[in-house]
Length: 102
Image 1 (tube, rainbow, N blue to C red):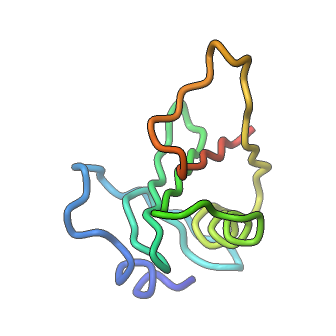
Image 2 (tube, rainbow, N blue to C red; image 1 turned 60 degrees about the vertical axis):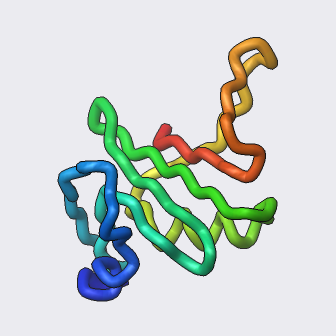
Image 3 (cartoon, rainbow, N blue to C red; image 1 turned 135 degrees about the vertical axis):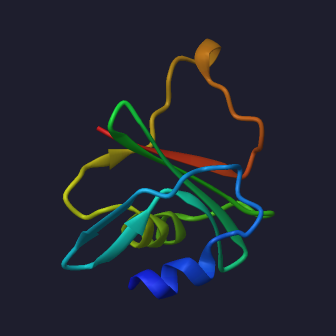
């Protein structure tokens, strides 16, 4: 995605996140909060690792999560959806999904 397309998706009511940009041959990526096809996408970095949270009013499927991953996170990383032990599982919204850079 090009930078101007990415900026059109940015939620103007962001949570005070200062955007950090990165580019590769597939597009431009940024931290921030975005609205995309009825979903909210949050992209942050913590300890130099990227994190993506995507939520909607409905359960998302594999293809939607895959689309969001490649649109909002740089290509040169592996990311995973992690399922910890039941006692450690935290998810405030049943239709929110988390991807972590490995």
